[in-house]
Image (tube, rainbow, N blue to C red; front, side, top):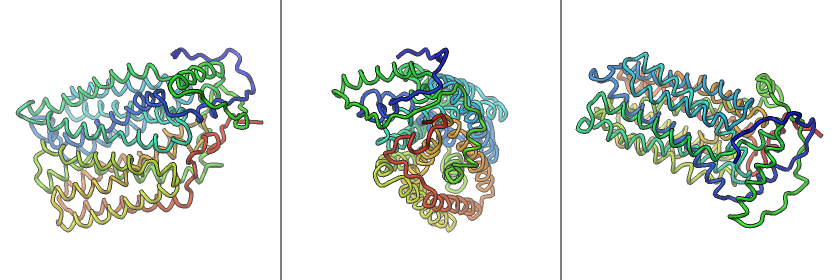
Length: 486
């Protein structure tokens, strides 16, 4: 497909289009599989990054490496999240303004540079700076990738595909956990070299992904709303030819599903704020509740679990990656087994159920940990069960904020709610839990788990009250485009 995308010199003031309906009627094909592989790989990279940092946190405290304290490990993780929040907001705005496709490459390149530089960090502040840069790339990826996937995948499959893609994070987490067994083996690599090799490999993987993304088109919905209907029409016809060659003749689109739009070149930052405080106020509350609670839970646990293992169970730092592997398995199986129910049973019911199940299991696990009745193995198994439910819950949070706001502000909406959610619920979590773990008190750590339980429970209640029935509905029906008109 033609990579060049330029605005029409004089975009029409009003257009009537069937492109959303034509996209939603497509059968699943190799085109959609290519999208999933080329764009969904972002989550694998993030899973690799977060798990790698969590697994090497013990090694980073070794005086032969960088000699961090537990609090400094948590602080470095917090700075990664600050970078992700900043990158998400900046790139989210630019993605809505200049298109999804351009930032497929920009954000991944930022990640590549950050991961590569992390491999050469020499002290706390260089490590923090490079982790913030890496986080900025990943945060920008969330906005560009999630918006494009939602806008290109058929409505009847959007929920499960989004959850499967978000769940692929745990494929990366599994790879990160397994790889640390090799990278942190002192018989294979010197103590201060193995962890660096891990970050270097992550940078190399992103080079391959950049090549694959050359075949991904611009979002057709974005092109139509931004006055590029000719390009969108040409791309749509090419996609239909490819799908027909594979799947046979396509049914004619129903003209009743056409929408009328008034294209604009740019949509300002204030639009998302006005929508959040006005017409979409309840949806904003829903998005914030889901994002804050899952961000706190995941960032608190995954950035610091290696510290729990080394501090309370005397697990050697080189072996902590093995304990993170079951986490990844539980998370991935959760979205695989439960994902399709978000399209069949419904968004509201499944989001509330998975958040509440996670909260109840977390409460039980935290209490058993405080009573010192769990071993490193049984604690890991309990977390694996928790994340079986928490994984589709967290993935549904990203799905929700990407589909319940107007198309023209989708990337910015994802960025805004991811940034606020992560900023409020996630940025302080690694530092807080690193500090609680550093006290050596199981009950102090339990109080942190208890707070996470309260957040997840509150999110479940809010989902029941304000959840949006977006399953199997076109994006334009879930949230009317700002450029729509008669």
